[in-house]
Image (cartoon, rainbow, N blue to C red; front, side):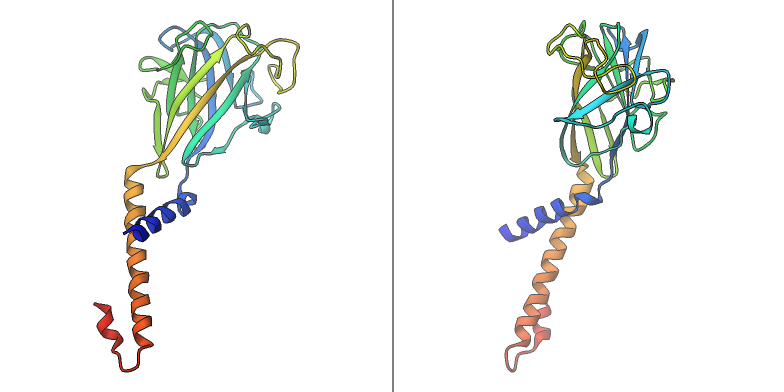
Length: 238
């Protein structure tokens, strides 16, 4: 039984390359305390438009950069936790909303949340009423969800913070249209996405791995029987 379970889990781990879910756009905007756009302040990961750019880092590495095609993001999401630091400049808002786009669909926010605090780290909530911005700064109906499923995976927003420049750590890493210091302190925060296989995908992978194991065991039994003088390998197929 232990060998069966080990085979199942190994097959699931080896099959994650078959999953397909990419984070391809983020819009961030000043909002009211319910998460509806308010105040006219906007950032995004589109690049090349009039909206200020939003820049992401994972560890010390920038995910996007500049103000052209490099400002866009295309992050493959594998099972696990994906943590990003986010930076924007300049700004004037105190409450913030965020919407996430996946798999290159710029005009369809799939996850929307807001930070109801006045620019500090006090948690976040799903935006469940009104509208949110898509990647092209067009208002769309809120998806009313913190999770999105596609390609056999489910991504859930498990952390969302965007704070004013006066909140620590006070730093200057970006400017409005480039990820280089711009002479002013940044709006900054984090987003965290937790990604898991969909239950149906786990069942399919598990069943496939189990069938593969028993098929290999059956072939092995036939092979061993064929090496015994006078044995009938057909008997071992039952």
